[in-house]
Each structure stands twice: as structure tokens, then as C-alpha cells.
Amino acid sequence: MISTRVFRCRPESVRDARHFVRESLSDQAAETVEAAELMTSELVTNSIRHAGADFLEVTISLDGEIRVVVSDSGGGRPVLRS
Image 1: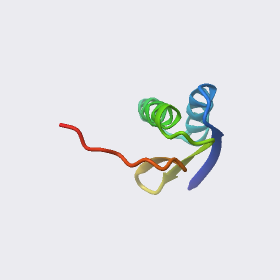
Image 2: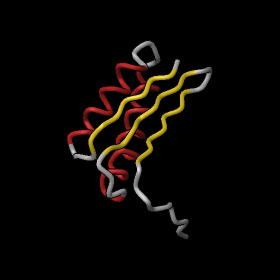
Image 3: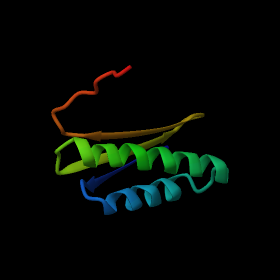
Image 4: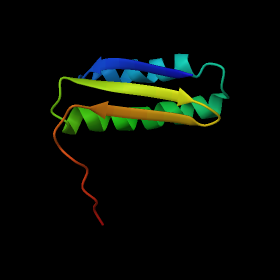
């Protein structure tokens, strides 16, 4: 299963992305869904705060493992800090 949704880079998209995760993983254990929601909140918030993009995309894949990917069109790259 792969589900993708595009969100505007606005604060209310954090809530909407969490809802998207909850719906997409509704057949998973509650603890798993809560962890995925929390991680998604963090990733979407970072994208909104730092990407400088108009839109971001959340992709959830479930193939034995759950993977949540948040991507945006911002030009920046992550910088490793100590």
C-alpha cells in the first residue's frame, strides 16, 4: 500500500497530515499509528519552517514496514550538526 497527499506549507497542514496518517494506517495498532503521527508532525513542521516551498508531499508506504516520507521543493539540504 502506498498513499500520497500534497499539502500547502501552512501550519494547519500539520494537523491535516496527522489525520492523513491516521486514516492511512487505520488498520494498524494504536501505538504504531500514534508514533507515525508524531514523526509526521515533526517532519511536516520542519518542512514548513525551513523549506521555503509552497507545497510539501507526504507519502506513506506499508510493505511489512511502515515508511513515512515528507518531501518539499525547497532548495536547502540538511546539515549534520554535532
